[in-house]
Image 1: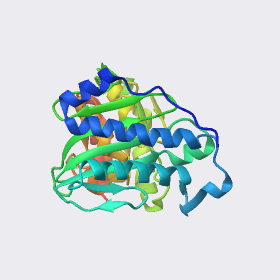
Image 2 (image 1 turned 90 degrees about the vertical axis):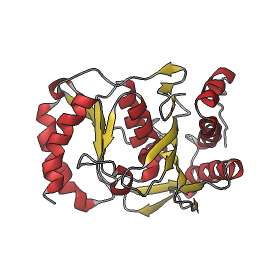
Image 3 (image 1 turned 30 degrees about the vertical axis):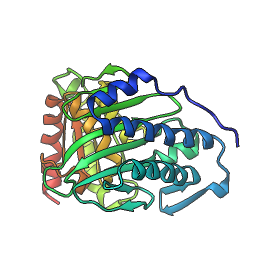
Image 4 (image 1 turned 60 degrees about the vertical axis):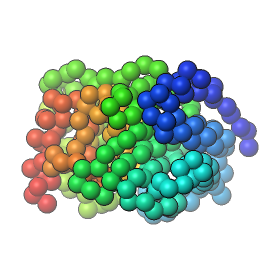
Length: 286
């Protein structure tokens, strides 16, 4: 296998993260390690390295190795903090939990479409009605995009502070979404939402990695994002990054239970209001 290397995170970036939240600096190092694993396998997977967990849901050797490396590093650094990962690694602590997706965008990775990331978010009281997002990191090692943030400290792409779009009308907005590929029962309401939103916005894009969709919303590339039935490790980091960039994240009822339901809207405040206005009646009728 041909290994690739990204440029290591700068000392200045790690110092800035450490100053905002010491746990964030650990999360950055953890995601860097996971990213190195993904680069090792990038465009080098064999058929034996890939299997289908369920219809439309792939796992690869890269997912599993990234999860092992990152979760072990987190357990060594914070043995009393829970770790919940997409591929099954779990160390319970219901008060404070790292949510890790070692490879968000596995299908993209398999198809050699360079939209994927390591996503890691720290959440306090994740099972409550109002979980507290503490810090998060999303790293695409191919593009070098490194998104990170901490509660009350802002969110960043590298060393540049992020700010959500300043658009105020849905008619001007370009939105991101994801299809409920693994949850066919969600398809009818999703299609109703799409039919309601699509004529009222400028455009809709689907890239296939929810963590990056949220980060691009924080960056203002997208003006908003919505998706059904995501897992906490898909959204914990990205939601924190959106909110620290001045955006709003909610479930389809306007509450904060998106980690539990998996239904999330993330957008600048005026665009969030308009998306929620369209989605809420459909979700409420189910």
